[in-house]
Image 1: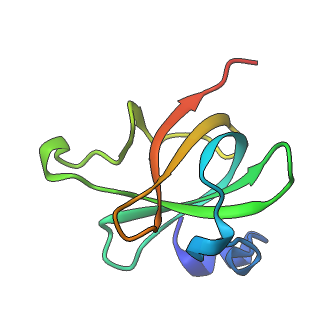
Image 2: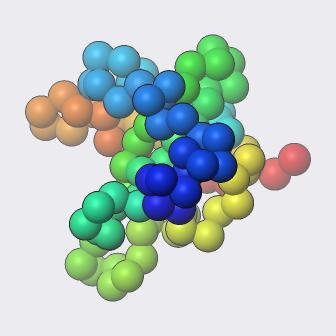
Length: 109
């Protein structure tokens, strides 16, 4: 989804934390609320609500050269996930301390 159509559909990206101090590190169950393409098209910004805390966070998934045209979070291709999907996220800090989505597993209901 692109930015302005997302706003028109009622999604509000500014309600989601993105600063490294606001994103928890660890493994969490979450709901994928919606996704937005970056301006460059090289990134999918995923917007989640963490199940236990209700905290709203955004994490990015980048296109990797080794996986031509695939946007992978661990073993999950994120572009085709329906909004509302329940997932388990694994978030680690990179060398600069920035939160990095290293794995996303779709939860079976």
